[in-house]
Image 1 (tube, rainbow, N blue to C red):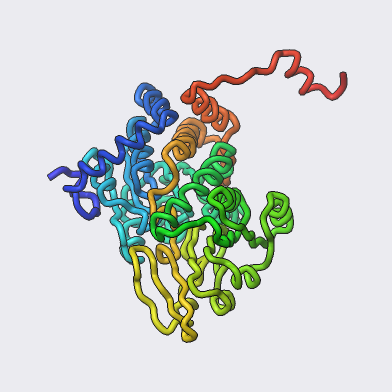
Image 2: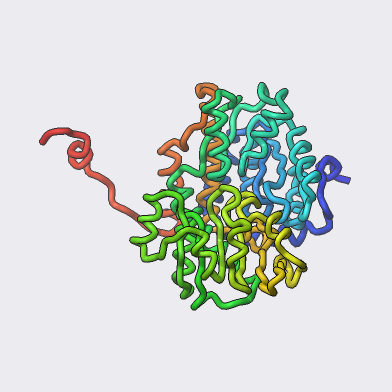
Length: 420
């Protein structure tokens, strides 16, 4: 038996051929990562180093893991969400020599144990999604603080955690905020989330979107993408916000704006995209019309208060895969998708490959930057260097066969001058 399989914690190694086909498919649609993989194979920027990746374990993440490994690193993976893990993809990774600790539907205890097992790998670098690796290291595995040289964070939620740690002087190594790169949030958050959320909702419910009232809670880049796609599908859009500037933006983009308590009375589909807790709670459930569909596209399963929903219900049952029906005493029924976890991943395949190509290229290049410059950095949160953002954008244009203009020396001088 292969030693990588012996060290791994997975569901079924025999699923590997099926997972391999999924990885092959996305690899054919990730030209930026393909270019970086060829570069990494020649340069070996991670030779002699170890990396632990905690992301949604599906095919696109698997190809990122293989790209990092192609650069010379030993790699281990864990899941950032138990419902988004695809057991066949995990098996394919293990069969190719990447240690894995994850399976679909892991309990909370299993999920935490998998994180610990991945950290037993003793990484030099990490790629995190939501901050689970970072917080576990700082709270429970502090012996690793002298080992880890840095990492990169995928999401808004994770970066909020990191900035709080940085502010309090608790961050033990440099972290690069990948989510703050323009090639991430302008494409992954907006177009990726916009498409994948509706992929997950439509394949799960098999219901029409046109004519329905869709309530989007949160009008950041993810919320903008969700609202934009809902509009294209023929829905009426209501945006709920706590930020006055974003609320003005939603209004001028053509959407209605109101508090959640008002929106709860008229919405057909509710999508939370805030990164905060209790966005939809008891007072909202109490006024919803029968048939309302609730789902979350923020990172954690805390945006729809499932505990209060269950407490109000006189009965509940699973009516379709990833759909729970809650019946109230007055006969109203509401439906929660994917247990309130990320609907686009727990009930779908996540963002399109071409979008994640850019995000994962940022991750790979950020790790290379840490390998080359990490010793010069303090224990803080850093933006993705501008040159990395531009490199990814140019590689993407090249893969599309597109060319753009360049500034002349005179134009550069004009922009840099403060007088004629």
